[in-house]
Length: 511
Image 1 (tube, rainbow, N blue to C red):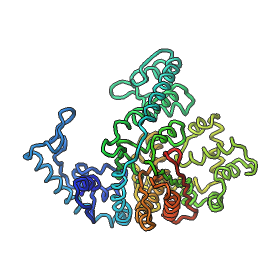
Image 2 (image 1 turned 180 degrees about the vertical axis):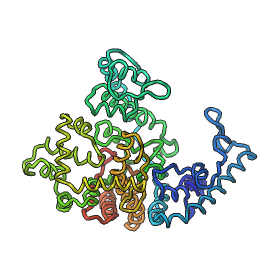
Image 3 (image 1 turned 90 degrees about the vertical axis):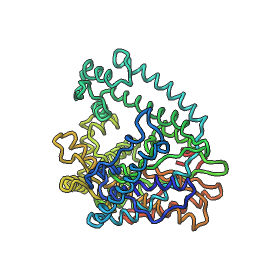
Image 4 (image 1 turned 90 degrees about the horizontal axis):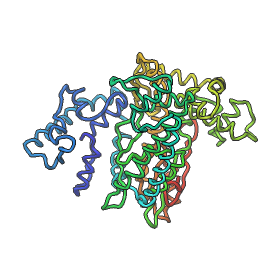
């Protein structure tokens, strides 16, 4: 099959038993070349077979004229469906043997393929949402957006449509003369999030507030408004779709609704999580890897002080503050710890001095000194980062600990800006991808572990480093204990993996 999860869910809903074993040509491709290109059947057919298949749009129509495939006349549906099956088989013959030569066979067979039935069960289970709470949130977000709009108009010196990229570009670059503006082919100024964030990092308030308004607008449209319409009338629950072959690092993504982009550390994100609730007589159980990317950094870069801190259960941010700023851990003030925390997490994503300065509300020069002091104290991290960038330049990809190839397009781009972005991707990909591989391995083991313990808890969601279960009240503690054990045993590193658990009637309370 190609995208086996989709087809198997269709068969399951029709009352047919699950098929096993299954080979999935989409995942065969993804296991070898995540990030290098898309993994849709048509794209792979052109790339590997030199054949352009009949398009879905050509048989169903587009836009308002599109009809369901079930209504496509048989004389048009038959060639399309037959070719679909034929191309999938031809792709299997072309791609399956390459798994050995690219050293991706274990990753595919033991991780990606085994995950398919787990994701099917999660999608079928869905999660209950509180419709009344969503409606209250939506009204509150609308009020706050109106207040922010008034503030932004005052900063701009005149009213304009915040949703109009053209008008925003004129305000920022024609009227306020901010630096770094680039015109698109249409002649209008570009105002994408990367440009706005760059301006905000340099201390410009208007683009920073525009980013805040856009984030709130997106949360309202994506969650508080859309979730109500996505409640399944038969189950009373929301059923997201997990995409297994989209990201360049191996991370799962989700759509309809997208549950990966709910902010983690904001009040808005916490409020949205409060709307995800357990059924009566049940609780939600959250199991979250603690600082897994930092632990992978300490392991991969072999940083002795950080490894010691993780091994002994120290506060890693306090230890970093002590090492970098030369202050004792005892009696460490909150502001110094916060600086160290921002550096720890920022380094993973290749943060700039401007970005760190904005986060901490300090001068970029001071932020630059902090980053310099960090690398002086932890030279192994700088060496790891330089080695990883060089690996990306030589091969076009970087490797996770599981051997996943994360391709990094743009690593040799002529544009310094695109090249720098690719270098940040290269640094982060083995860490983010390594974390993704570990949680996927845990997910493939958990259903059997819960069943062996006689538990009926169901895995509902995976969001980055967190798994969310729904369990009967009396099984909550046992579910948390088994999930913690399986997740912590999913990989062996030179530092311990730690999973934090929580339970609650809603996701926010559990998390």
